[in-house]
Structures are given as C-alpha cells and as structure tokens.
Length: 415
Image (cartoon, rainbow, N blue to C red; front, side, top):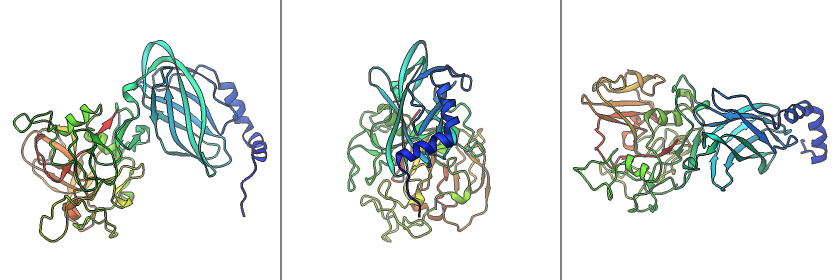
C-alpha cells in the first residue's frame, strides 16, 4: 500500500532528489532571460525556488505570446491548470493550458496577452496547479520587460472557453506558421439568454452548456436580407462581442490537430443524434423532425456524449450543427474541388482535404461537400441529420456567406 509522505519528509526527498534543480533555479532567478523565438527578453523576480513548480525561464515571442519554461519539483505528477498575468492596474489575462507535467521534467507553456512596447513594465505571473489530490496550489512571481499587458486579450467572458496553445498542435495535421495562441468557445455559440427550451432573443453570443444553439444565421451580414443591428451574421455577432469568427485553419487547429490521428477522433453520429456506441445527446425541443420519424435535427449545446468532444475540451464537434468559419474561397483555391463530393481519404496540413475516397458505412467518416460556384464560405463539423456522413471534421463549401439554415451555427474565437 502506498502512503502520501508528510511535508517534512517530502522536503527532505526534494533536497536529496532534486537539490541540483533548486540550485539551478536559484541561480537563474532574477537573471535576464534570453530572447525566445526571436522575441524580447525579460527579467524575473519573486518566484519561490523551493516551490513545487519552478519558473525556469521565459520571454516574449515574435508573435506576442508569453512563453515560459516550467519544471515539476513535486514528488508526483502535476497538472498546470491556469496561468494568470496581472498588471499594476489589476487587469488580467488568463490561459488555461490544462497540461500535465511529469516529475522532474520541464515543459514550455504559452499564454496570449503581452504586447511589445518601448517602455519597461512589470506583470505579476501566477501559476495555478494541482498535485497529489491538492487543488489550486499556486506559485507567484513577476516579470519585467519591454512589453505591456494587452487587456483586449483578457480571458473571454460570455461563458466557457478553451485555450489553444499552437505549440501543441500537430504540424502534420495543421501548419500553424504565423498563427498565435488563441481561445475558442468550448460549446457552439448560443444567444446569451438562451435556455434549454428557447433560443432567446439576445444578439450577444455565449459559450454555455445545455441550451438551444444559435442557428439560422449567415456567415456575414447581408444588407438585402436583414438589419445588421437586429439580425447579424456570425462574423458581426462575434466582433460585436469583442471576439472573432475563427478561420478554417484555426478551427482545425482547435479540433483535429489537438487529436492528431484518426484512431482517436471523436465518434460520428447516426440520425438518432447518437454516436456509434449508441450514446445520445439531449434533444433540442425546438429542433425539427425532417422525416416525421420522431428524430430531431439538433441537440442542446454540450449535451452530447464525451465522444463528441476532443482531448482539450472542445465540445459539439458532432451530433449538432454546422459551424461557420471566416474563410471564403473561390474555384481557384485548392480547397474548392469544383463540385466533387465524398468521404475524405486524407487531409493536408493547410486545413482541407487532400483526396476524396469511396463511400463507407463507418460512423464518423469525414465527408466533403462542395458546389461549382465561387465565393463559398467554409463550414465545419458534423451536422446531426447527416448521419454516417457527419464526420467530426467534415467540411461543406456549398453556400455563399449570406446563406443560413436550421442546421448552421457557429462558435467564436479570440486571438
């Protein structure tokens, strides 16, 4: 039987086992760190060299993300849950990496929220982690350098979001060159006043679980169709709330690339809003029964089985509605295959199918739909009523940006 050691015994074990690490950290603390990835260096102070998590070094990257090396000095694996940057005015930017750090190992963590400036500023850094059954342990210190806190990149409001560290993305799946770290809505967007029985009327998008998704929305505002103040497109709705509509590559980086291989993809769905294990989401009572067979076309946000989420916690990847991205392409773009359709045999790392294959009966088979027209806006995800063709990473290029429908929604991002 294994017993957890006392704090005193643990301290002795740390000095014996990891004493050399503490010495290195003590020497490094307060030093000027070298430039990270061509960005700016900085000073650090205040980080406790004897804490469970050691702040080894850090710097501002060329893409204005704060990159830091952390080392686990606990006797057990830790989970880094949150990194909070706070300036002297009390403004905060929060990243939630939710990343494990094995005993004695060092990993690099990124957070958005810093912008390079000509003057010197100080920002407090708090690293929150879990270890050995204890939650919300914290290490605090400060960094000083030619940067300032970018308050426009503060942790998004309006519900729950997932932080995407692009350094973790499988580059063979999505090339993230030039892409900064970003947040994406954990759930498909709903109106902020939506409930489990009503879509609501608010034009403020929110990421919340167990409510009716926001659908029948175009990608962008069409002046011939509606008043932008009362009927915005997904692009305008996200921007009005201070967010963005993710590009196709961002969408893929936040979903497929964090999974990285076909064997671990979330499972697809049947027309019963079930995954191929038979697990079902909570049917949206406002959804439509297309065939008068008792089967509805949508579920409540985040109500589907775990197989409709990925490893970093992005939900609603299947069994619900299509999601608009901000990417629009014409026939000349290789993403647009001129009306060809079929199951995706392989993806390239630019975020679109490399080749199409023959139909198959496997649930969750990624499918590609297109048209022979120009100006097609990219939608992603697995629409519930597409059944076995509603693969988690399916793509559709059939509509122009002003199109809309009961099976189309969106989610916002922030970068």
